[in-house]
Image (cartoon, rainbow, N blue to C red):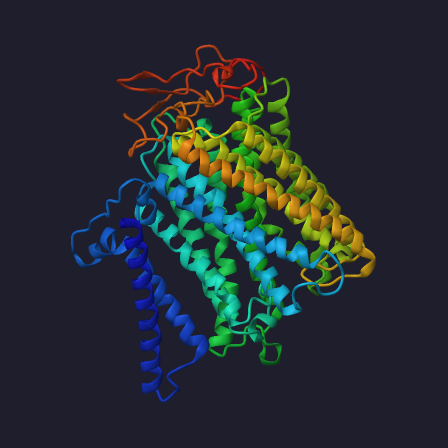
Length: 634
């Protein structure tokens, strides 16, 4: 089978590169009079050459590498579903590759969460030692962070942005394919960390522990540096694509709000991701090259790592959340059949978050020992960033108000994003203020808050987007009843789990610890049972997606009767996305505006006007033209 042959070739080339890296380093060390084998240095060099071999073997050599030596390039033409297992430059294929890969990573990370909650059903040790629990917790944390950073951006962003702006593809298709094919080595490397003792530092990897701990830290460092590279290259690609490849007539005032969200996200990824990579690179150099960035006895400063780390990692929260806001507002406008309320203010809010995200990092460090005179400015900056996030919340409410709501599964998830993030925002106020943060720092209150903002905001948006674009991606319609069962099961399980989790946090239960005070047994048992209930909801999702992809009824070209360009082409779209290049004339959200049309297709006539969604089987009546509301114009 072609797909199996391609993956086997990539693995083989990766192994050859790995051993060439180890062998080459060993030869150089031997010639220099050192032992040929140095565990951490050998792993590092082997990994670098192994990743190069992997991406070349996956198809990058034929599609790109040959060009560097003046040779003719070629693409592997894989039939049907097998094209997802080769180096493919079609943005739609890459988006689905990202989505499927990170859904698998999400389910693995969720399984680790179930193991953690099984350990925390009762005080004392149930299943794991402290070291084993630390390893599971560290893997869960970094894998879920990877999902939050890349699933919506790399998956839905790659798939939808060129369609939404009327482009044929991303600006740099081969670079786009490279960013995906760097992901599997990252996942495999992280899954190998238990073989070397497991991740003992959690996903933050603070020194001095990260410098002194076992060899698994090397695998963690090189994997996450590689993951950061994919984020930087992806951000560059989105920025160039959105600036230079918009269809004629698509001015900045006519961009769909999800594209604006991706534009702001791409700038954050491009500007700040270097921080995390630099912090891990310094840890790597301390371990491998004998440097002393964080060794106070030799002039280093352990606190330096936290500043560099959080200079990226707080803006990274908005890399996770902004696309979720964008796709939620996108769906809310279409399924409310109203213009997006205060469109310009929503755009301003996204750009305001972009501007403020880089000046709030140290509110994570109020208890770290940094100078007290910095507490006030970072408290104020953190409170300020709640203003643009609040604007987005108000834009969503204004769009819903007096709308003709069509409560499909995607719409339910979009509404849940607003509700969940509001809860996370309220608890975030306590963590932004120094006095309460000192009490709540490193407690399960922080865990609950973080999950309300990231899982409750971004992950709910991700699942809503998957349901929204499923007909476009597959040409088939999912089962709406199963979709709504999944939503309510997940929504109830999520809120019971993490709302109750605030209580043990207030009582002083430390996060990232395998044990707790016995008087919190009842609260933790309830949280664990609710967590198991939440985890089971994803079985419904997996069944619905797999069954519908294979056996689902054929989907219409535009089952949601949406105005944007992504729904004005076939499902699935052709290779070039549109039969003829579109010309944009009106705003994407002008529902209820007589005679308004978003785009024309020269030679084909105007776009198909939105029809009442009640023509979709099982939909509640919701006429397309309903609703007033402001802020639509360009």
